[in-house]
Image (cartoon, rainbow, N blue to C red; front, side, top):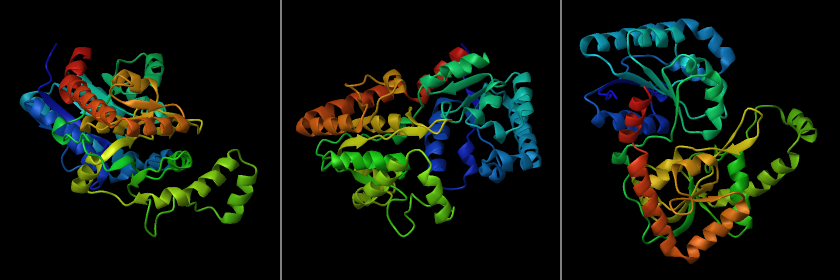
Length: 373
């Protein structure tokens, strides 16, 4: 097994000049890898603003920008390899971010290319072309195993890798908040939080988009008359009406986003942190799969409660390191149980933190990647 000591890393949220996700991936990918290798090289002076469009139709007009960016990346990777050698390129990219020929050229000079992707069950089309050419595909969703297997490509099914330096101990030993959720107000989250409220579990909510003049998760640029006609003949009309009914109750529990200092203080005061980890699949149906938060919050030592799925079972011992639910009624019962048994929250949080620090860090993932390569 060849150790990975010189790595070139490219993360798609380097497209974003500022904001939460740029900070998140910098902390947990770039800063997570850096202390474990002799040299971590990052792309320099690249303009990825064109890739932010994300829409396949719009991206057809971006061949020139993609080619320019890929040429610049090739020069940087080739120079790094010639000057000291590279053991791997580790990226988190969509297919449209790069010319696939770039990946082939890098592999041809003896540098394996590993691509991480965490939406393989919901947006596989955005990575499929890239998945066919890289040396190793790393993904966290068990439901995607068959997709990569069908392509006949090398793969690593493993959860996210976190940086322990950004996982302070937040085990809540004197909680003031029974249950909390931190995140954006997507439609299904509003419904789920609304049902918890109906079942007697009000949730303290924090995050962007819940409060203020611009808080409107129902915004739609289509004229009201057209939306009304579509709604009358569409499936899920009852769900939409219920969601709007729930919104005012859920919003009353919500406050704005948290900066770093307030985030850590808030989390340390929560007995239970709730995970709402559904996403829409290719047919537009909501389904549960492992999200970054499903490893992050257990890493802090939170008593974490999230929707049950096979990914969660693969990453943790459910019931001892994290709690799960299959319906919002069951979620409410779990919350009430933990509040009746406060020591349970501490035990689960401490066990979860031990598991993350032992299993879901870059030290472990780099070893697994090296073994697969």
